[in-house]
Length: 478
Image (cartoon, rainbow, N blue to C red):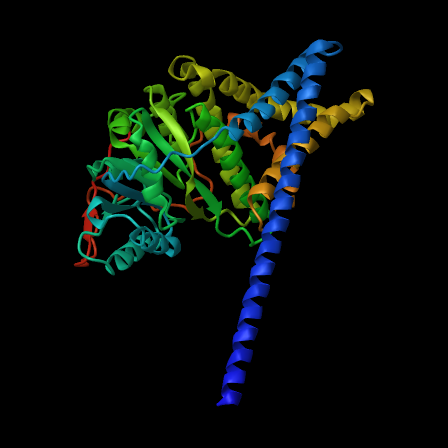
């Protein structure tokens, strides 16, 4: 008995010692993490101070190349303003709002991923009677439709509505079909390869307590970040873009692009714009890309506020091959080239306080490829190395890396340095985007089958009792 008690006391002592050691390690880790965050914050402050000093010097002593000096002042001031505004960012407060929500998932040749997205949407922590899932097959040439039906069939009848457009009409048409298929107060768009966190919808809708808010973007992480160097750079780029740039835009009430990966719109902010947005034309050609940026742009033009909520999280897949990545970037650049000037044309009256940043961002974006090319050839033309320009790039890249280091602890922060220069080096792609702006192809999609003829009607939908499969007639794109 005495031996048993001794053993028990010894085991209890070891458990207490182990627990104490674990708590000590946890405290030490928190201390180290806190110290690293403080160091990163001080580094960011030092870089911002240096940039601010440089702007002051340029303003006080304008000399030499006046155009280059003005460009430096504008760009440096813009970069500095992102950090200052982001420091004032606060996510919307949780007020217990529970509106009716429809999650709209457009899918094209995403047979492997669409089922995973459906399962993640059905696992959300939100009242089932206030949530509906609408998944649209945009005429996929793979097994997307069958995968949609199979995934939806695992749930109660009516939990998932599956729509089939019959043939490929484009993401915008699929999104519009999803909007028309529901009467929910809040429309949440989720890409077919994205997955919201379980509490993401509950968090995301809280911002709509403000009646002036028309759209809210969530925070999207790269799920396959560890695949290779390219995905690591994209993961860091995504995170910094959301946490720094969208945070700054949110403070001004003008997030310029609510990401299609995961964003919510107030129904009343969208329904009156739906027809014009779906059939948007530019330079005489139908717009088939840049759907999310175009919709956000129209919501802003209608006078609504757009916000960002860093607490509402989702995960998406980034391109792992350089060819697909470059085609994606070309499509995004074409979208920005079209929508950037359109935003500038109305932001002066709809969101006046955002005008300076939008104006500088637009001008800098359009001039960026020219400046990069000039800086690369300058040493060969006049024998002078653009030291100030490249030093500035390095400082900005370092600040981005420190932002990531301060907020995330996954060891990827150094890829912000590499990624900043990587993205800048192919910024001349914008010139090709301008040249190809009337080309409506996505580049990252597989070829779609031709539309069915009138003599060859669509095959009937697969019958699965647990869902509502619907064939949507083709919409005129004239």
